[in-house]
Image (cartoon, rainbow, N blue to C red; front, side, top):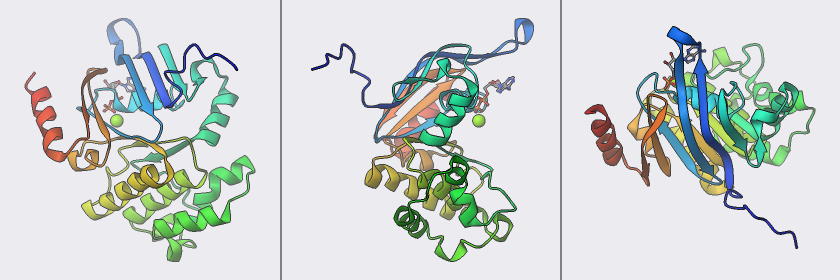
Length: 251
Ligand code: ADP
Ligand code: MG
């Protein structure tokens, strides 16, 4: 039997080790992410919070291979993404990651259905019809598949973006303020969808949010300040989140 000397991270969907992302240099240097080590465990829902400019998006983008790393490491599963070439990163993003953005990022000329299957179509992969139907049913998009984004409400557009992220069954789904442009009903829908992706399908989900209610759907909240981890909460509720936010503001 093969002996594993280090299997402490075997259940980690994504991991950063002393990750730094520095923009500019000299006078204009900004340490957007200033030495963060964090583990996103398989089947966990994590929310990242913190003031504007605290490095939330940069951390997420670096960990998802959307931005380069200045020093430290970022892993998706066991893959050290800092060692990959552009082509390999593109393939990894396509095959193993799902993304949901604040601005939906749908292709305006494609129908909802075409938007949902776009990543699979680009990869030349077959759509699993049963799973597609399940996702579409769960997201309440059945009657909307032939609509283009401009014919859909913001909430519907974001549900299409969720379906697009879910349909390839990625290892991990990253959302940068996925409910930032939604009213409270649509937010609740999107968050329930992400929650059940974790609970029913064992997905790993990481979102950035400003909203304590949104963060309360997560299993864990990580608070950033000035590019570092400032605090952390397990099994958060709105009250405990507001408590930490208040405490961090006082400093
Ligand atoms: P957040 O998502 O928490 O609001 P960001 O990660 O977007 O914060 O930004 C963290 C810091 O890095 C900010 O000071 C921001 O101005 C800076 N920053 C982000 N992206 C860039 C960039 N491409 N070039 C220079 N500075 C940047
Ligand atoms: Mg941001």
